Structures are given as structure tokens and as C-alpha cells.
Image (cartoon, rainbow, N blue to C red; front, side):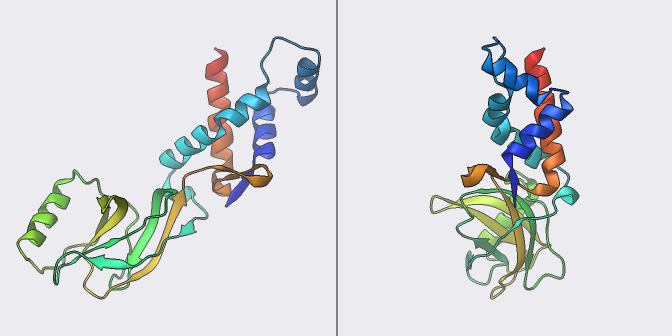
Length: 196
């Protein structure tokens, strides 16, 4: 789940119709122009985050597995939480509990009315299982996925997430390769805006 930063930079230059040889000459001979390659490297993580947030779910061809222990909230309730959401968690791709026939692909906002209603039911000791959905919460000072509609004793059967992009060793960007073309386009648009 990594892309080569040099390849992305070269793709951006090609789309901008910038000759790599002319760029090298401009740098070598002290042209007042900025180093376009360095600019692209400086904004690549921010651009990658924007792409991950806005990309259609179907565009993701790969992700990292999401798993963890589920702790119940209350006795017999139909709510659980996955503790220790990975520190680099950025976007949920899929989560299916062992007692669900289908999984969820979207996080419901904690401000959504349905979240408040289900929490109210649980606080009153209601043991009714509700339709499956997941929201991001905070428990014991850590981010956690709150799972609604799963019975006691269930576990995470399948799960995947997209991590926050970061530059790694060997000039690699932790980023889904299936979105590389979208990243290139985003960088081209940013560079064009800077030049205007």
C-alpha cells in the first residue's frame, strides 16, 4: 500500500508539461524559479489526505486490516466498541461483525439523531438489537469505533481501513496505489493554483 514519490513527481511534471531537463537546467543555473520537484514533495502528504477523504469508496483497491477486541458497554446491550483504533486510522472501508450478514462502509456522525436514540435505549437497559452501524467515539482518552447492532460475544469478522498518508523510508508514500492517478491530478491542480 505504497507509492513511489519520485514516480508521482514525474507524473505531475508530465501533466504540467514541464520538461525535466529544463527544470534541471533552471536549478543548476540559478534561475529565480522555485524548485518544482521540491514543492511537490512538500505538499504531497496534504494532497494525499484530501484525495483519501474525497475518493469514492469503490476507488480503493487496497486497505489495511482492522481488528481488535470488542468490549461491551453495559450488560446485555447491543453495543460494543473496538478499542485502540490504529493511530494512523483515517477512513473506514468496511466492518462486519461475526453476527452480521452484511457489513457497514460508513461511519455515522456522533451528532446523528440515531446515535443519540440508541444510546438513550441502552442507558435505559433496552436489550433490543438495532440495525448495524458504526460511529467514532472516544473512550478512556482513546479513539474507538462504537458498534451498534451487534450481540454480546460477537467479534470482528472482517474489517479494513485507510491509514493517514505518511512519507516512509526509501522515498515511499503510505497511500493506496489505486488512487495514484487522483493524487497526481490533485497535485497538478494545486500547482496550477499556486502559479496563478
